[in-house]
Image 1: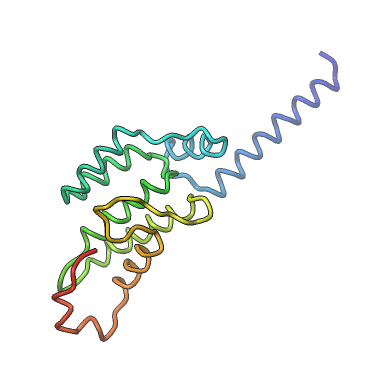
Image 2: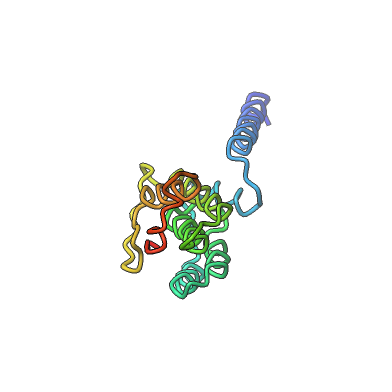
Length: 166
């Protein structure tokens, strides 16, 4: 081969490798599934496993939240689908909700999931059309989760017992 061709090829490979390192550093994926999902999402080829997603929805609507999250994680192993991440956050909300108190740890995990959903959503906006949900936007869900992690005087209100879960 000619020397200019070899140099150009070497420079192209070096730039591609440097771009991969910068992307890995910026996104900090925790698993190989997140790496491959992030790369396929960046070129528009990422797909959710619809069978696992439907399993997750079935579990979710039967109030089996741990099972629902497991199915949703199988459906969206890379954490790149806003709708799936929304349902994961909602499952944390529903599992952590209580008439007298909320599970702060589950609410914090829900906040992380809804923030992840908002980050990967186009324009940061998520609206889910599910008649079984009382909160259909990520903004509503985020506000409810954030309110559940704060401590204020209204938490001591005895009328709170009559407040329903969303």
